[in-house]
Amino acid sequence: MTEEPAADPTRALSRTEASTAVEALGWRLLLGELRTAVEVGSLTDAAAVATAVTGALGADADGHLRIDLRGDRVEVGLQTRDRALVTGVDVELAHRATAALDRPVEPAGGHPVQALEIAVDALDIPAVLPFWAAVLDLVPQPGDDGALVDPAGVLPTVWFQQMDAARPQRNRIHLDVTVAHDQAQARVAAALAAGGRLLSDDMARSFWVLADVEGNEVCVCTWQDRDERDVSPAG
Image (cartoon, rainbow, N blue to C red):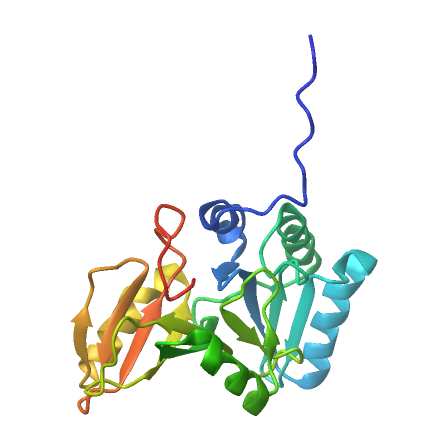
């Protein structure tokens, strides 16, 4: 009887696989990265959380781990950075990081994790992309020839949506806010209650297109249903 080959931990996971693997731990999939957050009481407390996570992951964290420290919150991200996607390695690191913490992650009463992108509608993407790379000092995202990222990890990703005709009556730049999949309906409802309009839910659960009272657009995005169809904005 032959043994089944061991699963390759470096295999890129589908969105469904990645989300399912960590959801019960309190992590969420946002834009090809596993994210969670921990509430803290001080910067000293935040540093202790970071120390616990980095101590548990050790050298395995290199090329995967991102930690953002604030006086009231620590946000942790895991991604195979040189490929800009989630692999089995990232899932295993999420389990180890969670086990190392002595407190809940992504608490129900805390501010949920989210990610922001800027989308630029363009007729000639190769012509406009270099401008945005230069003016924002961005670089191409690994594995994606249609997006620009900040190598310092501070500015949001800029991606480009192909237009087939000029639309002067519509904004040519809009925001994409990616939220945890279980927060999307509440976020859309909150935006509508604040005076927004729903322009389209044709691509829900992947994204909803909303606008303010003057027509400025934003997409509320999740990872859901993107394994079954190739859609933008990216989740």
